[in-house]
Image (cartoon, rainbow, N blue to C red; front, side, top):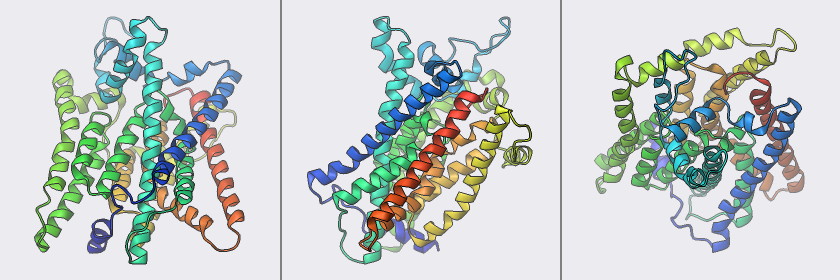
Length: 442
């Protein structure tokens, strides 16, 4: 199986770079992706504002809660410029090191002009700009990844020279994939002052670069992702696996030494390595970065014991009218869905519908989230990236099915569109409940 996986990823004809297509076809993917993501985001903003108003809350109050508050405070005041301790005699400032600096630094840079001019909520406004731009870049990236997967599979199955998809097929796939990504449960978090959009954009473009064999570019993007989230470890391990595969091929064939593939993990590790070294020095008195994670957030890798206990404790809502219990149960079933999806994803992996670097990254991220203790009702947000990556081949197959030349194309397209609408409604319903009705962190 290892040989088959290696061949599927590295010996199938990769998409040419740049693709042999007209300018209009090249622009089809980013344009369709950006328009779809922005449209869904605008609709969600209006709906969330109405839901919040119904509960006598403002949109700002909903969007600045929990991690968003931490991110904006770090951007404005620095890591040790504020305290969240309820006891004024015992300031607690070390909890902030759990948040990586990539997103707050960008927010500080973008919000600086507003701050100088004395604009109200300058940091919050800057955070929204950073998240919006990162969301659109992520939309383009996830759509491009889907197109590349389709083209690679098409070239491999037809056993002939690579042929580009038509502009119509690219647009249909980009729209479908962005509906998947931005209509998913908790996907509105991409537009909030969270690091999700930035991290997701960096990861998806790193994987695009891997599939196109631009390994150094993937390493640089991983370096940046390593300044954004701890879960970049999953992407680093994928780069290491790619390097091993390339070295194996080099040892068996007369090809040039894969310097770029071997260097990519080393380059990618610089970001997370630098931040952890700094954080460990800053909080050395309490045991370093991971001690701060455990003491401040009850977060440590426990091989899934905490996740299993949570699922057993919150399988169903036992008291009607308990809004918090509903959120707990929603979190439980998102966890269960992620586990089932990881197992089910073996089928598209072995069938060649999903390149193994994408699958490996998704499963490793899911494993790191599900294998750790901590704030369990934040799991739906933390599982967004792996769920989206593992659902990609099913969406690609769905678009292929709807776009086939067999009779009934209009009916199949309508069914796919209806499924997209239901997916968006479900996704926003879950997010709205967690953001407005739920009292705790998401």
